[in-house]
Amino acid sequence: MLEQLLTERRLSRYRQLRSLVVLTILTVAMFQDDPRPGLTGRGVALLAAMTVAAAAWVAMTLRLRAPRLQPYSIGVCMAMAVVLTLLRHGSFAGGYALAAVTIAASTLPFVLAAILTGTGALLLAGAYALVGAPLETVVIWSGAMVLLLLLGTIRRERESRAEQEQLLADEQAKAAALAERARLAREIHDVLAHSLSALSLQLETAAALLERDRAADAAVIVDRAGRLARDGLTETRRAVSALRGDPVPLPELLRELASEHEFTLVGAVRDLTAETGLAFYRSAQEALTNVRKHAPGSRVTVRLEYAAADVRLRVRNTGPAGPPTTGLSSGYGLQGLRERAELAGGTFAAGPCEDGWQVDVRMPG
Image 1 (spheres, rainbow, N blue to C red):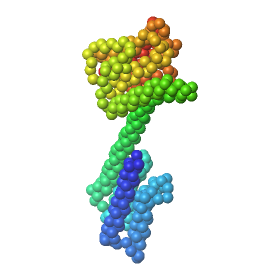
Image 2: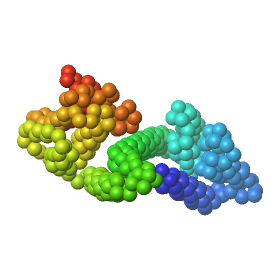
Image 3: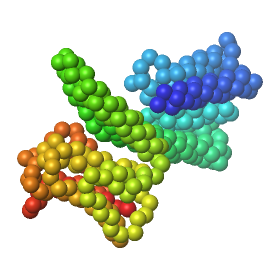
Image 4: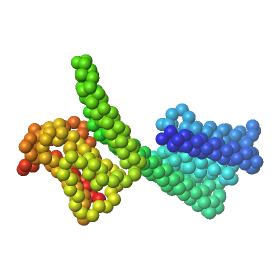
């Protein structure tokens, strides 16, 4: 955005400089033509009109004073073009009118610019007629003013459209950045919430055992905490790999995750996107974690089914312990899983079934 602003400023300064260079060339040309501006006779009137025209030109180019005075600067410049035409019997005086139209088309609303251009063209045509200029001269100068108005309006619309497209692109980039931040937040939650919370619980237990002089039991807990830390590092590497877009070996990961439960694979395995594969894995991981929390000892089945149009994952727990009193936690875990599925164009559902509790995830793949 800053780069675009700097580019616009450089372009504006270039156009201002170009306009002032044209004014300088036109002024030199006016002094070379007869009758010449001077301090005697008609030269005084020519010099005065040129001075006013030049001042108006500089004001409308640099937009001095206030933007609301811009139409007046443009109008004065056009009026001086008419006066100089009458005083010099034509020549280069129409250049002031052309400059006024060019700036009007780029800075004023179209209706106001059109009114000023139409009025200026009529007055300039009348001035050329009064000094006896040929008809083609009248047509050329008046037509040039109208043409410049149209070209300036087209250029302004094109620049406005490009600016809108750039703003839209910036908004899309911002939305993409926010989506990526949300994705990273989900990964951080899914990795840290499982590993660090369990690790913290194990260390607190070990500390309590040490206070009771049960060093042997504490050593077992510390060893378990070490395994949890290593598992957390593995999960972190897996999450980073998925964020980089590497394919996720979903069946192998689910089989490992459900090593203590019943795992069923149905259909022909095919590659899934990293986002889709990771969403399935996190859903199974969250579901199994909640089973351990709310229904320990229950029978758990994990079923991964590759259908023709989509892929479906179901995690169901039943058995002596009965269904959990609650399903997935109502915190960020459930929200994150639902977001994952929806971003991949799928659905996520978690709730009681006829004989227990079930998590059901479907996504195209």
